[in-house]
Image (cartoon, rainbow, N blue to C red; front, side, top):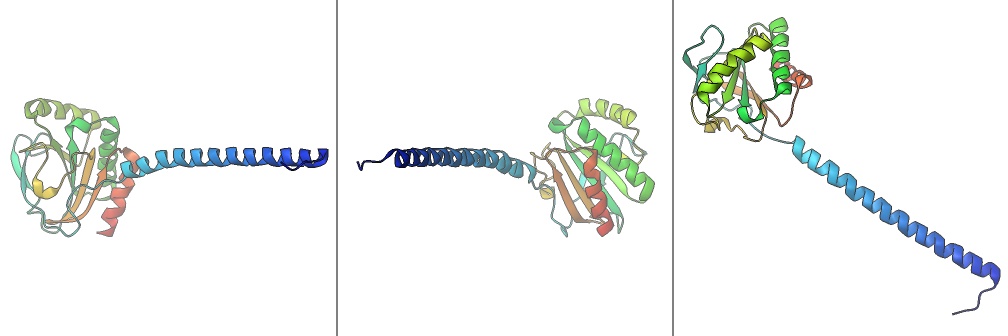
Length: 206
């Protein structure tokens, strides 16, 4: 090794320390970047979910048991026969039901009642425990005091009608239709009343 005088040795040691410090900083930066990506990427994937028919799709009719509203106690056909009226279909997976979803539905009901009284709303519950849900939904109505929303249960498999493409991972699927065609489907893996504005914005476009 080449002999170094004191000043050169100090400079050399300082250089080595700077290099070690730089190396540590680079490692820390890489570690932080990996941590950020580990957090951001799953969140992005988590936020992105598709559920419901694509815009322009002709809706397939399905049957639902009405639990609340003027038609309570009857099985009715939904999805078609609405002519040019706007209809909102809210598909709820029983296993995902929680208070934030209830707040979403109440907020949407209030907004529609104030500004778009001609729009109909149907909440369709997806479940394989029909009798229990028939007893439960009137309690939901009593708590939320819904004015525009009819609470119903899908008459079929808890996955929903196949043609509607309801994603079982979606906590809530909102399908906006005009007549018998879908104009927009919105899927939420997690939601609350703040997401109602997204539905209202889509209604204005159609």
